[in-house]
Length: 234
Image 1 (cartoon, rainbow, N blue to C red):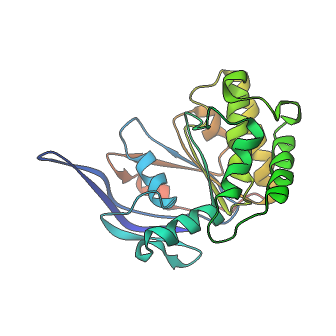
Image 2: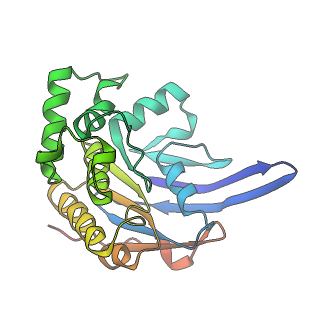
């Protein structure tokens, strides 16, 4: 996975906001990487580019050697559903659905590779078991704690067996103990499944465990950030 000389410019009325300014970055398979920087530095925008949620103004994004910048919206949706998992800072769970229904939802709406309901249910149950929520399958989000909702979000991101998981400030709304538990959970999945994790964060606990910390400010990477160390073996 790589970003090559990616820029992103937003127009806000007569003002042009340069969110990314020529960012180039390679991510190794199985890496556990943190993108760190202050609010407004461009770290969430970079994750959106890598995750095919937005298109660069210039430059290109490569996933599995494919230039995703050339794909149409349907192809991008299919790519996201098949290869990328998302964990959002505010969880983004559907409030009227149970934990189980939230986790199986991305499997049921896949366009390129639909999953039968019985298989989707089995995989969702397994994902929730992995994150320690086997007893909370029928609970709706408003019946869960913040840590439990974040675990549901992790399970939803993993249920499609993605090659990469993008996590935008996943510990920002959690207390220290719950945040540590979520980090430990994702580290364990990274080691066992070799799933690539990329975090947008300013949490020193996440940065402490990362294989690499990429620093971004004013839409640019720090020069040392482009180095890729060997990924630790499990």
